[in-house]
Length: 246
View 1 (cartoon, helix red, strand yellow):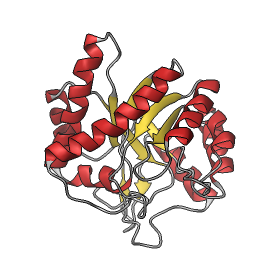
View 2: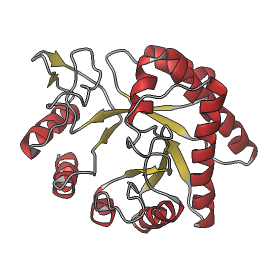
View 3: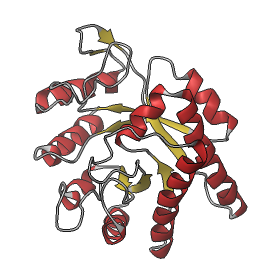
View 4: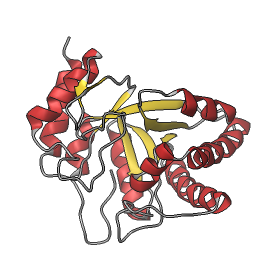
């Protein structure tokens, strides 16, 4: 959410917001900006939606979808800068910042690199220490639900960071539980019936079909849906209705 930039509009946040529970709001490094962040926070507040910071590599031109290399201390500063800005804008509207979900290449890279995942967790751990002193709830980290979450859980626990595992309603998976690269034409599910079929499987704890045709079972706490396509509003509404069904 909040991924518009200057005169360029991305998605329809106002139409999508009533149908979601959590909003990953861009922090200005891949999209968005201070005014857009503030207006998106206000929209989330209006609809009672939990607010999360969506930090990225500093990559406006590539929409945060290109991998970049930073020393651990520099990446921590990049994360603290973005999360701090989101926290300040939330404070100004008297709403709570609840979690962090890295965007794009940063999100994908931290799934593959134990060192990078450790750096992200350490960054949040430092923020949470300050939040604890201020008697604020700790930020949790949204990360990919995989076939083996133990390594990530152990690292997060080392820094006192709680994890929220997510599955993607509209992304295709590889057999090992990783997301199929966007370099492939079939990486994103575009047909609503295919997306809803995958959501039904996640909801029931049943396997989904991976890119190679094999069956893959994932356990998740939350579902991610991308809002940057014309069908997203109707799709999100349909997903919400499906999840509320008995």
